[in-house]
Length: 428
Image (cartoon, rainbow, N blue to C red; front, side, top):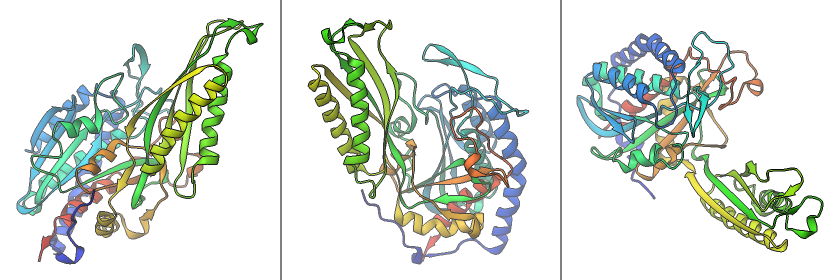
């Protein structure tokens, strides 16, 4: 889908030198609060679609700023609207708010020790992907822009989205439910921006990519049915475990021998296998689950078809059957090239040109991708790696040792603010 973006040449700056100084001062004034909010949220994480206290915390602060606040969107989402003092477009800024069922191993004074129920089990809970920093940055942005309301052109929509990590069980949630419930309408959003903290990118650095930037995320299940037999007589049955091992190898051949990897990467990972009850019984059934990551929509569909063909034919060759189901959780996160070109100078102004780097795509996924169906979208990354540390040795996201240096979260605040002001420059 194509969108009409306003040409950079059709704008003149609306920001005076005095107003630029006001922005710098206001961002500096909120810096300590942003860190404090982040640490409070880190110590009090909540799982997807269960972010009740988190939502209350967000809404309470937004109401203090005098914003129009809507709660209960997509279960626990919060949306606030700031109507600026000057005419202009509607710009949306998004932060995700959920945590993960991960135990925190880092020895921090604000370490999470919380637990919660997840799919019938009691699990530890941790902001192991940095969504606590996203909330704090967007709250800081809302405070700065509210303090400069008379200079803000147009309308700013602050979107605090639950369940980015995926709603539990069969529940709806995340960006698709936010969109379904009208978050991109009333008023209709003209452009949307989002950021993600990164533990392996140097602190204060902003990374971006035009076009495809993050992978689609498909979850698959393969059910293999054979025929049960005694473990000492495999020839009297059909072993679904042996069949599954061949299917797994076949999936990897799709990646290494059937996918044009110079065009875009493909990842197929089997992360879970369940079969059998005793070591001397060949079971009748096996179920395996995993994820598929692609960065090209045509390749995504091709991989789906090849996986189904591979699994069913390998099973058939052994006298077994295989049923493959694939559920698309997120689409490819796509940064509108025209919007990136238009707004990159604003990011360089806010973060410093030397601190803005073009990046490669990543096989991680983000449901921010769905917003791009409704308006031009631009998603970028903010570094949280402490100075002097080796990025290769930094703990990855979704792990117990995940760590973010939060001393430069104000860079994210300033970038968001700069994007709001610059996107809404007056047309000549």
